[in-house]
Image (cartoon, rainbow, N blue to C red; front, side, top):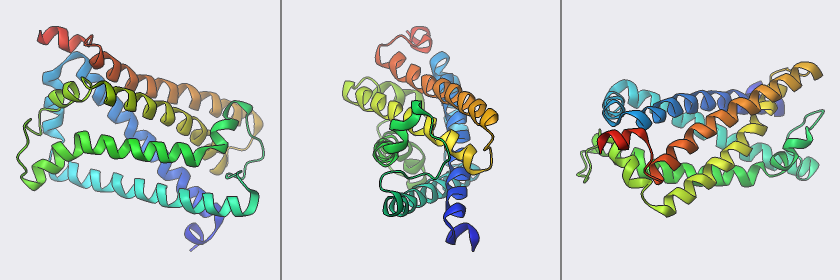
Length: 228
């Protein structure tokens, strides 16, 4: 099958799965921003997206996308390093601003993967998985607002999440324009436009995540003030 057996096909899979994951992260960021203003509203969303069948199906789909993206990332990395050393993506032009990210996508990807594992443990394991498995946990699975408070009251977690978000920014800022190139946005004018749009979009997205982490770390989220 062309998508699986050819190098270009694998890059298309990487691009499509990567863009799908960016869309999910956009939804996740919007959901997190709700916690800044209302703990009650955030908990309502968590209850809606708990162990309900549609949330479980969506989670399984996201997991499949993530696994596919990760597996093909390692396959492409191995292939490209054999063919061209450390240059992993066959593009005709590499913007200097993302050169470092382009050459270190594997390292960034590993940091992103480790951060994902930490995030899944702190939230998904204690919330959706705990509810599905009938586990006894100190905080009810639907009380996501409390999980945010507890997690980001720990300075170690705050530092790790900040590192993770920075790595995500580098990874996505390169991945966005690389995906556009792969799916055929090759013209110099539109390539530069998509690169600019991608950098702005990814920066705003990561700032959204970062604001939530720091607002709860320094106890300055409006929702905390209202709760007090």
